Image (tube, rainbow, N blue to C red; front, side, top):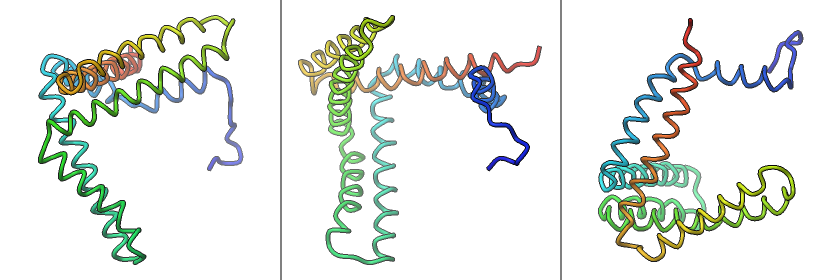
Length: 187
């Protein structure tokens, strides 16, 4: 909540400056760490894929465990137990079979990219003839090419695809944080 004398501003420059400062002085080092992790993930995609599967399976297991605890405390019918049990089972299966987990995550990534392609095409249709609408078409085409590549090479390429994508995401997130952290340095 804002104090009565606080002014809420919608000035884009002020909002951006406030957001950048909100990242704090640690952004530079966190960004560098993320870039290193991303580069390692790109260089060693199977290792990054297994690490990703382990993290996702741990999150599923812990989330399902908390949900089971909540259901046990507050009761309910059999259907209330179904979703948390599925989360725990999915987490256990993924951690016990990391290759199958990587295949499943790569398939989900492929499905996401397919939806993203259609979203890009729809947005391009709405934006046309405004400047930049062609870039949305290009983004959708790239997504479709990636989906075709995944579909033709799945499941053999699952670990490489998942590892490279997670590594690339970490690399670019790290680059963005590094740039923000660099801009916050005192001259």
